Image 1 (tube, rainbow, N blue to C red):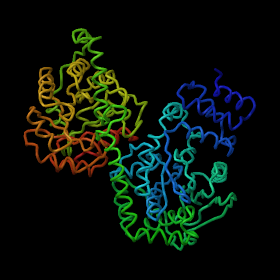
Image 2: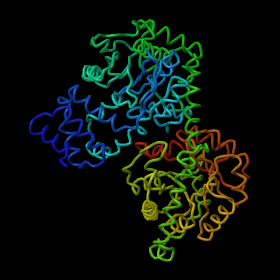
Image 3: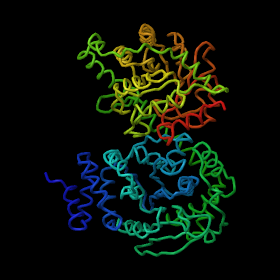
Length: 631
């Protein structure tokens, strides 16, 4: 079968252009995972900005939506589906205004399915802020439609709905320049909104975007780019706006004065880390007046006009303020967070049967899969055969290493010991750092002061490998004071413990919810026979009794519910109270800031495990110091 991608590259390079259908078919080939990387790079390089006509961008965006997970919400007659979204990449770091505005718009009576992702250039993206407030991002299209039907709003996490983007990630990283994929995000909402407010990072994208939306059949849309370059309607002065209304496009300049709002500098609405933005977000929807509230009202007012709920921008702003002051915005946010967790929890935990099979949580699905895989592996490579290739390093005593880690290297002890995790992906977050060099990352962690390096080795959902563990162990043992190495997997068979030790693990993770008491006791005994003290994970108060009865001396308290993926940062504080002083405690999951570390230290944790925050950090060693340094 002829390659549509190869044909398109030839047209772009030899004929100086391609048709929209050719570009669309080329992207479908890339999204399928079967495309040649060199051809993909050639396509992205050849499809320069001057060739990105509205027709070509529309065709490529359609191909991406066609390859996305489906989301088909039901709308009543006369209802419109709204999205308020920006391209990002504008170089500014402002508060999450489009996310807050979306909540306000939903609270005013519109139906909103916001499409978004994690932060790109800023400290906190739409996914980051919603997750910080407790929302579950791991929602599929059917669940999203259900949540929206009940509260008016739901978030569509781009990493969840566009899994095919992983096929182009490596090439995009290698190119290191903006390509057509950098402008497609707001145009690829799988729910296909009927009206939309979109911010763009460059002025030349305004006419392009509004014409793409017109070609897509939208009746009303607004594309904005502020004079200073913001991909939102700016509170600081003029914003260029391209307005589509009943098939006609108008270009004009708007300002806060058109909304009856004051003008103020962008410094007053600067963005911060997720936990700090969370407080601001809650203050705004809770009715606190000020620049952040006006910034939200400004953008929500425009969206309410686009949605047909206000007759003018000024009326839109008045409706937005009234909606916030009435408490409806806070109510919608709280209901959305609750529903986002309950619909996933229902899917994971109910005994409803489909096709004669009982539904299982993702945790037990992974564990069952691992049991099957490991059983096959154990028969193919029994333990005596595996021993032939065992590493020669004796196990490091993790409890001693934790104690040493707390002491730090300076005059002032560290707050806690750090367990730094290498994690390529997860079911709740999608791809995190799929192309990470595990050895380089491990050495960065070790030199930064990590006491333990956790290596996620589960291959299907977390994209790990037992070879990663071995490579990390061999690398850190070249250091003067090496950290302990933890096997992070779903251990359901003693073969995994033996395999871990043969490949250099100093400890393994044992998850209480997966292991009955007799099996947990046996696994702890196996670990100790091999010179390892396991990390025994609990997530609920009732699991502590099981862990202690099994003889656990090192307990990890997971703040993430592994059935719903919801993070409750108070879990460690509640559960730690049940653990005696002679048992070491590590806090696991959701740790992003020094304040989190201080909170868990106060609760009794001697160590914290940090994964995603470090994997996404531009400088992990600096982040480690920021998190745990006693100075």
